[in-house]
Length: 129
View 1 (cartoon, rainbow, N blue to C red):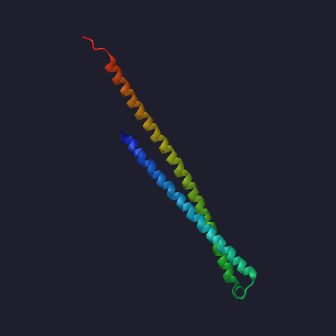
View 2: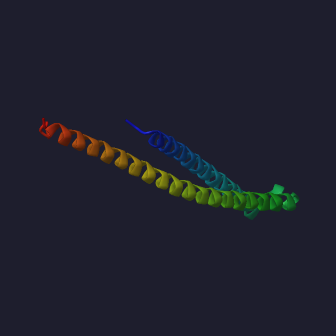
């Protein structure tokens, strides 16, 4: 039977796992945003290099769009790096909580085994009259 401490630790382990999953999802989303922005900058640069009539008429517009896309890529990459750090922190906390939960469970199991042994010894003793 789990003790109140074990129940609390088990709930905390589950919460930390959810938090870790959240940070993983955020990291993946930021990486995807960075990749999309980088590809957009690459596509605009290729259009500029091709030298179409529109790029000749509005070169500053194309250059601004490339700069904007590269800035979004850098920003998303930085956010992804921050999420990766948060993910590592959540993982470390989760591991510590899981370790504490295992220790509490082991302690509880040892205590139960000790009680069983004591009961067996007391039942085994001859009754003195």
